[in-house]
Amino acid sequence: MQRIFSGIQPSGIPTLGNYLGAIRNWVALQGQHECIYCVVDLHALTAWQEPGVLRARTREMAASIIACGVDPQKHIVFHQSAVPAHVRLAWIFNCVARLGWLNRMTQFKDKAGSDREAASAGLYVYPNLMAADIHAYHATRVPVGDDQRQHLELANDIAQKFNHDYEVDFFPNIEPLILGPAARVMSLRDGSKKMSKSDPSDQSRINLTDSADEISNKIKRAKTDPEPLPESVAGLENRPEARNLVGIYAALSDGSSADVLAQFAGQGFGKFKPALAELLVEKLRPIADETTRLLGDPGALDAILRDGARRAAAIADPIVAEAERIVGLLKV
Ligand code: TYM
Image 1 (cartoon, rainbow, N blue to C red):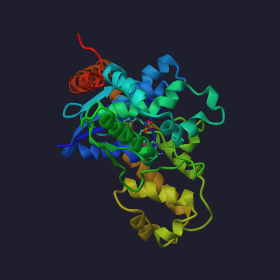
Image 2: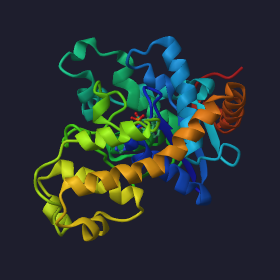
Image 3: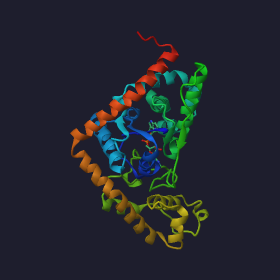
Image 4: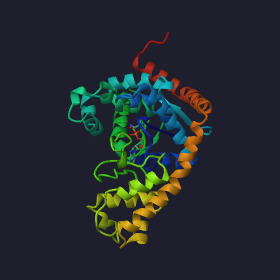
């Protein structure tokens, strides 16, 4: 059975993008894999977080993942800072990865913006910590949204260089799993920008905790164009907002964009948007309700996270200890 690792930053409330691009696939993959899902609080620190808010968001993110259907008993749910093996391996990877590789990371460029000098050093080496997250478990498959593709290529480059430099076959190659018609959900305000939990505009995204009214209003106000929906997927080209909403409907109804167009071709957004809002409310309300229920018992949630961290550490500690031995760190 292959081992899966994936992570999510507690830098906001999880969005529809996180759900359709990642968490939903995490849930679906549980049957055939050993899964390890991590709330990556150390990654969140690469941009400023209010300390109390970060702690609350870490619990909320764990509750959301479980509410979406991840089983923390059969699999592992934990938060990154509770397992020091991640940081120990990340330091080794800081010394394996080349500056030239990190300079090519488009997410660093996007997040650092025009004032690169003011970005944290953590933001720059962020992909090395992400590689460590995965390789500390010898995980071989990583379900993510499309925006993480480049980071996973880097994780493979790091593993290869480590294996080559130390003449070992220690870290396996990892396979990105970028699945479904919504691997890249776009902002509701701008079809060229990805939907993000850290976007300053709440109108740009659907949060998994939004009420039915909030969801309906956001979809009603979502940017579109005046044309009716086309007959075929090719007709969505150059219509990024329409393509995005059709992709969301397709993912939520377990179909393809072509299936959605077969149903709605020729209709305007006046018809399509209410149907989409209704589907969103139907799929997201149970998740929001279950998240609220789980957050109502923080003691039980913390116990799940503690147990997850203990089981995660039992896997990662020997692997990272071996990596430390390979590079020549003295064990006394
Ligand atoms: P994060 O927290 O930005 O997002 C978590 C997951 O959600 C996916 N995602 C999206 N998918 C589709 N459309 C969107 N608009 C959208 N926005 C986010 C992301 O691709 C991701 O799968 N670096 C990672 C966290 C991480 C990680 C890891 C992932 C840290 N260590 C190890 C995998 C393995 C991140 O910032 O995800």
